[in-house]
Structures are given as C-alpha cells and as structure tokens.
Amino acid sequence: MDLQVFKQRILPVQGRLFRLAQLFLRNREEAEDALQDVLLRLWTNRQQLDAYHSVEALAVQMTKNLCLDRLKSHAKTKSTDDSALFGVATENVSPYRQVELTDSADLIRQLMNELPDQQKLVLHLRDVEEYSFEEIEQVTGLSVNNIRVILSRARQRLRDNYLKVNDYEAGH
Image (cartoon, rainbow, N blue to C red; front, side):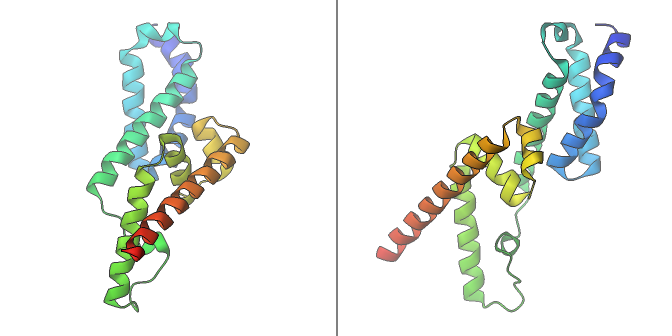
C-alpha cells in the first residue's frame, strides 16, 4: 500500500477514530496522541493491511485497545476520589464514615476487577463513564439488547459478591 492509497483508505476515518479515542480518554490531547499512535502503527504495517476485509474496522479495534491500555495504565498511577464514586460530599462526614466509604469503594473496585472483561468494560462505560447505550454500542460493536443483558449480569454479580463479602464480615 503506497502513501496515496493509505491516505484514501485511512484518512477519511481519522475523525471517527479521534472521536472514539476522545470518548474513551475524555481528554483532547490524549485522544490526539492515541490517534497518532494508531496512524503510525497502521502506516508501519501498511503492507499487511490488504489482508484485512475492513481496514476501518481494524483501525477502530486498534484505537479501542490502545485507549483501554492507556486507561488501565492511568488507573494504576492515579487514585480515584472515593467520595465521588458514591456521590457523597466529604466536608460534613465523620472520619469514621470516610473510612467506611473508602473501604466500600476499594471493595467495589476490587470486585469490578474480578468481573469478566466484557462485563467490566460495559459496567465501566455505563456506570462510571456514564456513556449512553448507543455510545457503548459504537465502542464495543455489541447490540443494545446484548449490552443491557451484560450490564444486568455484571451489576447482579457485583451486588451478590458485595453482599457476600459484607455478610461474611458481619458474621465474623
């Protein structure tokens, strides 16, 4: 694939890839960096692109994977404000309650990490990032009905495991 063909096939989807990256990363500069990385990887592997049925689908998948990798690395380096997770203002909360909220947030984060990847992704996009079902459909390629089922199962599993841990702690 030469430069002209690359431009014809890849550059028209550049806007879509950028919007997808921005949807995941919620930051214009990081989305631009992610897009540049994807375009560089596509250019580097341009000789193999003809083997793919849809280069656009490949580019979307690459963008999604790269953004998820970046989010994972950010999650390891950045601590979350636990009060925001529960929608509680911490100014008028006792220190005891603050510890309790922090413990609950840590437990939920741990239980979310134990979910299967697809459930974890859909739950994160819907309940943490507050994406619409249509946005999740665009990102994952799943149907809205499928997303609803996955989300329901993820929430149920999270709820059951949370109650199981708390019942166990209360019993001992």
